[in-house]
Image (cartoon, rainbow, N blue to C red; front, top):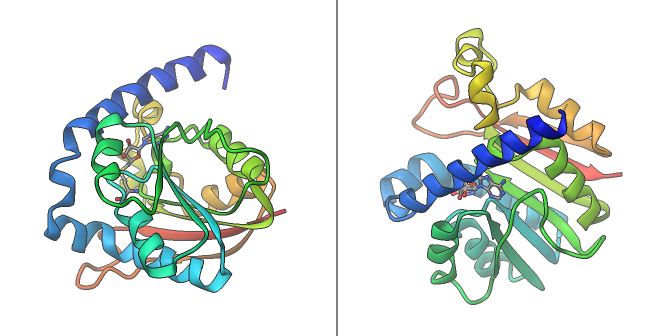
Length: 216
Ligand SMILES: C[S@@+](CC[C@H](N)C(=O)[O-])C[C@H]1O[C@@H](n2cnc3c(N)ncnc32)[C@H](O)[C@@H]1O
């Protein structure tokens, strides 16, 4: 991507995060959370428990439900909830004082090099500048550190047709194979990739995929 294209994409990302300022209040409704957001969060908690990570960032943390759950359920040394939207960050701040909330872009998180054991993200990666965000995750993770991302990774031609080129500056949902290639090109080894179970919704309707990787 040229410098001009990158600047345009970031300007669009500013619009996206302003939109989330307005959505912040609706976001916590129990039905939306149970059907849409809880199942991927369960998957991430399970991955973190297995890895025994102690310093964890949830990037694009929104209103902070996952980051607060990580702090409450796993009680690691440190949990950071990072989001570029002021409205979402405001909601997050009132949720838990066991999380350090950071109003930051995924592409510039501000941690020192190798400061974290795990970076996780649910339903936000499609908004990030993928290569820049993955380079930042690689920089802040320790060697062998865990990266676990859930997002809709559409595979059907129809779903892919819903992402015409002009939309891709706002949000781009890579197919699972693209996701794997992007992550590996950034210096990670993908260890697992599979659909998230979202009962009673059939996976074909919401093609959520969990991708797990380790920093090389
Ligand atoms: C659909 S919400 C997901 C929130 C949360 N992860 C969850 O699963 O409930 C997407 C979030 O990504 C954030 N976001 C979008 N672009 C971002 C960026 N470049 N850096 C950090 N956060 C970003 C938005 O502000 C929004 O809060």
